[in-house]
Length: 181
Length: 213
Image (cartoon, rainbow over all chains, first blue to last red):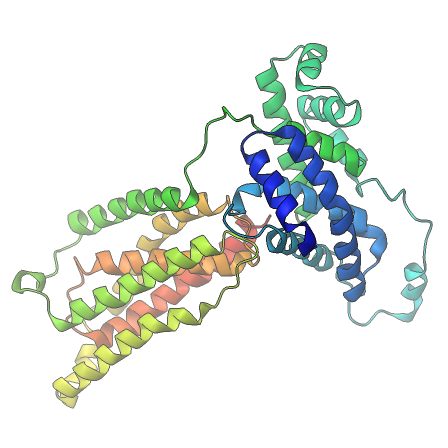
């Protein structure tokens, strides 16, 4: 990851000044390396790497919502790495299995049909449980690819209200995924 | 939701350059503990009897208590801010330093005072009241600190909460000198230190829940 230091910190500085294009590009650039370190962390902990995409999305959400905890004068890669590690450990804690599994439950551990790997576990149904406005805004912006303005017109909201609903929806998503559920 | 869709949504949640910037957490934390400390300090000054020894200058017990408590609060403040960053490596052992200051003061006191007075010095007038006041008066400061620390991404939310607890209890112990009628470091060590540890423990428990991210 360290080879990305210069590019990532430059892009994040630009993002902090409001450059959304640089920011989207940065998050895309981070996805591959993050996916790899998360998979390796998960397998080192003896956890299924099939949950890797969920953890990746939690890490991306955390990078976004906690980006002010990166100090612009310090290297960004250790910060990204620490967030990924935190999310892996969080995932491990939530999925901790009893140390002594009774024999009959071993069958449950055999590989079952893999869930669609690129869907956050439960995020589909979770999206449905968000307040209506947040759900509609997230659908429009994330799934349909609308701009803020398009979403505002389509949903008959002000652009400010769309921004607020988006931010609240993402925060709720992060809480739900990282939370005690 | 696919990861690429999520990224699309995240990029749209970026405020533009004109958006208002929040104060840095260091400034916010100073404001939070300043205001809550003012509240706690006024409560001590207005509702509790003044420390009778302060009228005659600073006696050893008060001076050492202030020194240890200020160091404790400063360490708690510094480490609380460091821990906002997930990559920070934190060593809580530094919190032993103010305790060391206190223990040196106790040693001096024991050398100066006759052994026959130690028992009375240790127990004071009303030790449980002192314990309860220091612990409970720390809570407003602790809660104010949490309100700022929620912005952070601590690798260990329990430790972050404990550090905030040490900071809050350090501030309260400093302010409590305005009232504390006991002229003994033996007493302070026996009754303030457990109260401080209790506040740190409460901070760890709350932090574990509230500072999760």
